[in-house]
Image 1 (cartoon, rainbow, N blue to C red):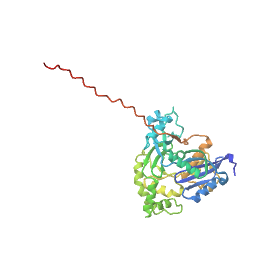
Image 2 (cartoon, rainbow, N blue to C red):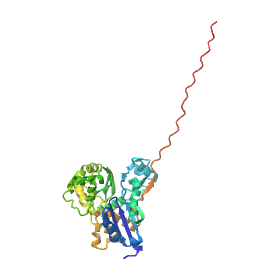
Image 3 (spheres, rainbow, N blue to C red):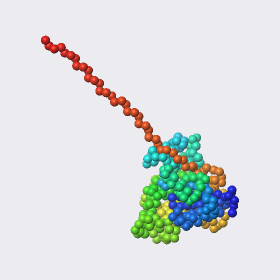
Image 4 (cartoon, one colour):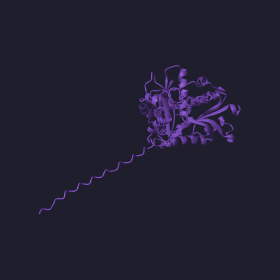
Amino acid sequence: MPTAENTQIILSLTPFSLHALRAANGTIEAGGECSLDNKAALEALLDAVAPSRAIEGITAATCVWPSPVSWYVSTDTEAMLDRTGDALRAIAAGKQKDPHASLAYAACNASDGGTVTEDGIDKWVLAFSSVSALEKASTGLLDLKVDPQAVTPAAFANVGAICEALRLEGTDGAVVLWDLGDEQSNLLLVTAKGIAATASCTVAMESVYEAVQTALKLKFRGAGARLFFNDSYDFTDPGPRIATSIAPALKEALAQLPTTPKPPGFACPVLTGKQEWFVRETAIAAGLVPWQTDIAKLAASLGLKFSEAAVEALFSPFSIGLLELLSVRARGSAEWTPDWIEAEGIAEEEAAPAPPEEMEPEPAPMPVRPFAV
């Protein structure tokens, strides 16, 4: 086994899944993906990437995916004028339901994932969430006994990998990345040139569970949630019905995005390859194309490789964010790995003191008239 000095462990934790790998000198030796509900698979995955974790624990480069997250791409004017940390914080805070609440945000250039600098002019993309949501996501790493070397936004790493995959295709294709959360979701239109636009969507995981419950005529919603993440359940028959029930709301959100020369691909990296049936059927129902990419070819373009075919088979397009993060760390780059920044919301302006109340002028004294004599 390689020595600790040239071995890296990369983890990506989403609200519903864990994606992990171990690599030495750019060669991926172990890893895979699993849903958080599958405790046996979760333990096996962690043992695979960190065989000595019971004694030494796990030290890993990590990225997390809080839920919920909101997204915003700057206008041309904002791209030129609003590039400081204070400006980004104020814009994120102003778009929250409660602009005065503390928040966590991350930003990078929408085109190449680079750092937003004050003298730049590129459009930037902003992701923001509540501090409590980020803390909850980060606590999930502690629950897994992980000592994080860094905690960056998982969604950005997936965007970077999709951009690279589209560049390899050499076409004008696009991918709609579905940021699916517990209570809300977002759509990111990604091209080879970065993030083109974002849109909010009313379909959330709760909607999916309800769709499973209805399609399978289950008594309780919780049963739908358990079945959705059951790796062995056959959704061949109910899958299209589940997708059809959520497709109208998804189409409404898609209508907010710019049109593309051809139907974009559809990806949902918060899940795993075991839920590929859901992403495929949802894409078809919404008029999109299920997105696939050649994992080995993408890894090679990022300067990586798999130790053997059996290891490559453990990964799916749902885990390509790991490849991007590993490549970025190897290159010492900052692309698509902005830091989470915790900040206060917009401070309430102190109320200006009220002007003193004007007193009614006292009436002038009536003239004294002499008594008639």
